[in-house]
Image: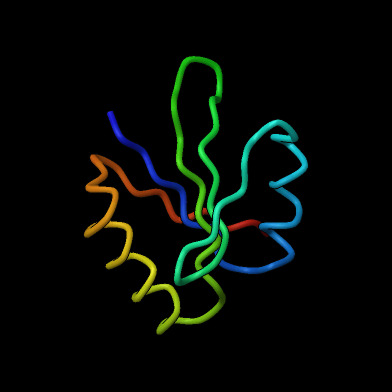
Length: 77
């Protein structure tokens, strides 16, 4: 199953990146991304940028390029 996790705010992205220090960070048109393993699950994390327009654009990019089975929009409070 292909799973992509969208992370919008820079503060959230900067909080998640250190959790996967061995992951290789790649650039996309919308922000950074990285492929990680969480237990036995392969995840693609993508920093989408803040706001409706950035999120909508990043989501369309993810659908077109990654063809995920599941997209999770991470929101931290």
